[in-house]
Structures are given as structure tokens and as C-alpha cells.
Image 1 (cartoon, rainbow, N blue to C red):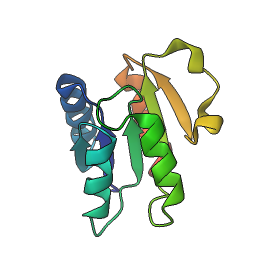
Image 2: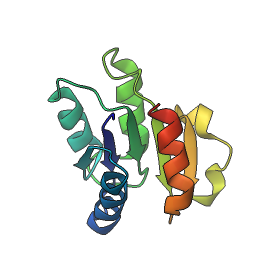
Image 3: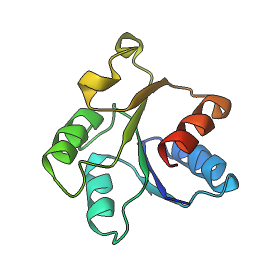
Image 4: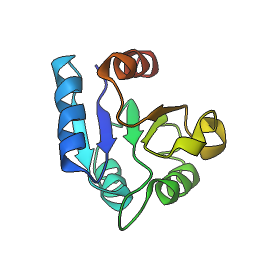
Length: 120
């Protein structure tokens, strides 16, 4: 089963998402901001099947991460699902460069089908 990279500056959210994904059999990787996520991705021999990305983070936010990821041919193919508290982004996943957008707090019952579909 492919790994999922969880990128969120809130350690409790990161931990909850990683625990829920692990319980479903997914390997998880975690990062607290976009810069950590890029370092994690570039340090992995095997790419994750999906990135779950928060937008509002210190150091390198989600928008900056998406821009850098799209410009890197080795990383650009990894699908990204955005998980955010920002309400005005509904329906705007494609223009963000993401395959889907979930509202935070995200229900596990909503998240798992998305992960299964994108990691198939």
C-alpha cells in the first residue's frame, strides 16, 4: 500500500491523521510545513501515493509548497489533497493544483474514501 505524506503545522491534527491512516494499513510520513515536506520527499527513494496538505503553515505555506512541487518534475506527479479551514476555497482544488479539497476539521469517513481512490 502506498505511503501518504501528511503536511500540517498542528501536531495534534498530524498525529490524528497519521493514526487514522495507519489503522487502515497506510504507511505515513509527516511534516510540519512545506519546507519539511520537500525535504522529506527529496529524501525518500519511494514517492508517496498522496500528499495531504494544509495551506496555513509557518516557514513555507501550502501555496508555496504547491508552486515548488509543480515545478519539480520528480514531485509534480504526486497527487495533493488540500485540507484547510479556509471556507472560500470550495470547488477551487484544480486552480490550486490539488486533486481535491477537504474542509478542516475533516471527518475520517470523508477522508478515507478519498485516500483509497487516490492511492489505488
